Image (cartoon, rainbow, N blue to C red; front, side):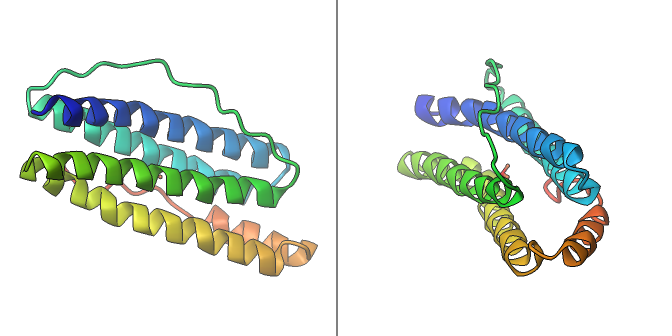
Length: 169
Ligand code: FEO
């Protein structure tokens, strides 16, 4: 495997684990605010990010490439209101999309078609993640300022259940 592609794939394990850590922090924020549904939504988001990390980990191992685990940074966001959290989520997903695109670009440059095929799932997944984050912001904009509507939105988010990723390696 090309050195740069390998480096970026290995880094992505860390980025995905950081994402899990970040969403765990979001979940913790909402738990403290008494919004269990939002806390549940981000808890599941955290689980999905861990799955993403494991997909990169497994892909490298399957390719007989070395995996090096680095330190995971501390979640560094502070929030003045619920909406800040949701917006930080969208901003983070856009950043992750840019990382996936960067790896894709590096794989493309060296005609690493197998890595490109592996990353195709993530390209699609990032589209969905950004849509979900956007939808949440829209709902909060519409209903967040009314306590009864916020209660119902919180209930809706409490119904989210975890499902394993559709990509199996
Ligand atoms: Fe693993 Fe939310 O991207």
